[in-house]
Structures are given as C-alpha cells and as structure tokens.
Image 1 (cartoon, helix red, strand yellow):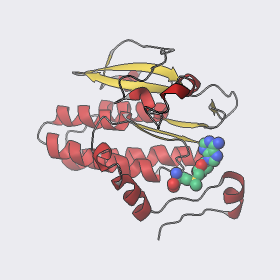
Image 2 (cartoon, rainbow, N blue to C red):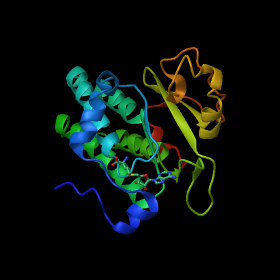
Image 3 (cartoon, rainbow, N blue to C red):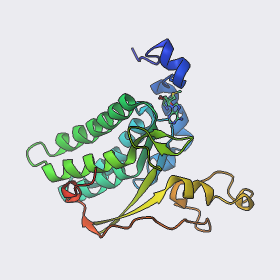
Image 4 (tube, rainbow, N blue to C red):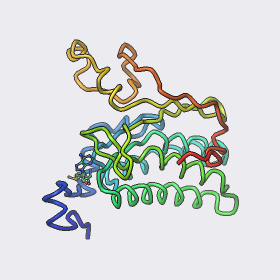
Length: 223
Ligand SMILES: C[S@@+](CC[C@H](N)C(=O)[O-])C[C@H]1O[C@@H](n2cnc3c(N)ncnc32)[C@H](O)[C@@H]1O
C-alpha cells in the first residue's frame, strides 16, 4: 500500500500529501519524450520524498541501460548525467534525506544489477555528491535553504564533455528574475537552464569550478 499522508499535522503545516505512482506516471506520460531524454532537466520544487523524481530517474536509467549496458564506462557516464539532470527542493529535512536515499537506491540497483562484480566506489561517490547538491533542503517560495544558516538556493548545472564534467552554479532567484515578462508570449513556461529555448535569457553563473573527471566528483570536499 502506498502511504500518501504521514500525519494530519504535516498536511496542515506543509500541505504534505504524496502523489500515488499511478497518477505520477500518468502525469509524466504527458511529457514522455522528455522523461526519456537522458539529459533533460527536471525540477520538483516541492519534491516530498521524490515520487516524481524517482519515476523520472527510472525512465532515464532504462534508456541508459538499453543503450550502454555493454560498456561499463559509457553506462556510468550517462547514468551520472541522468542523475545530474534531476533537481528537487523540500522544506522538510526528512523528506529531502528520503528523496536522496530513494534516488540513490534506484541508481545503485540498476548499476549493481548490470555490473555486480565491477561497480566502482568512485562512481557511487560521484552520484552521492550530485544528489547532495541537487536535492535541496529549502523553502522554494523564499528561495532560501533551511537550517541553521539559511542561504540563497543555488542550482548546479552539470554538463559532460567526454569524461569531464563542467559545473556552473546559478542562484535560483536570478534564474526566476531573469524570466522577463515580455517573453511570456513566446515561452509560456519558465524552463530550468533554458535547455531547449535558446532565445531565453540565461543569468550569469555565480560559481564555475574547474572541469573534473566525472568519476572524481566525490573527492571534492564541498557538501
Ligand atoms: C503535496 S506534497 C507533494 C510531494 C510530492 N511532490 C508528491 O507529489 O508526492 C507538498 C510537499 O511540499 C513541501 N513544501 C511545502 N511548502 C514548501 C516550500 N515552501 N518549499 C519547499 N517545499 C515545500 C512539503 O513538505 C511536501 O513534501
């Protein structure tokens, strides 16, 4: 049985009602093509424990498996890319932890199923590093992180160049503010990192770390 309410208090305080798998998949089918594009970026600003994000990752990893199961390095590269394309925010810390755990579980399951004897700790660490960055404990309305020292929410854009990964950090506020009203007619929906609307204005990154091998992300000491 899927549990869609944890407590009355959480529903009253945070509107926490989880979406059932059947509805999640029906909604994702409305943008099926995008859910099956490995690098297509998704942000769930009230992600809960990740009901939408988990199904998106499953779909993307099925594509990665179909295309790259015969080559471990290729599988790893595109699986890391798939994970890096998924973003979530939730105001409740336990939801964020559970969301990261579920997403990692999906990745780990697919990875170890295909390469049971040769999985690499460094690939696992890279995925964990990305999930720490992409699944944010924060208030999506205030656009600030939660916790002792709230900071503006920052999203990392990840792009692959062969085996190297490029990260550019953008403030959520700048991304939302840069969505000009006069563009409304052209692009009725704002679009994370303007992936496929080339004419959309892209804000300046606030941080651009050097290129790093996609299997070495876990060695960075940032989270
Ligand atoms: C209706 S639930 C949806 C959860 C998930 N998207 C799903 O469909 O299963 C709403 C979620 O938004 C979170 N939430 C409420 N206010 C928020 C805010 N200001 N910023 C981020 N998350 C918030 C709650 O903690 C809860 O997990």
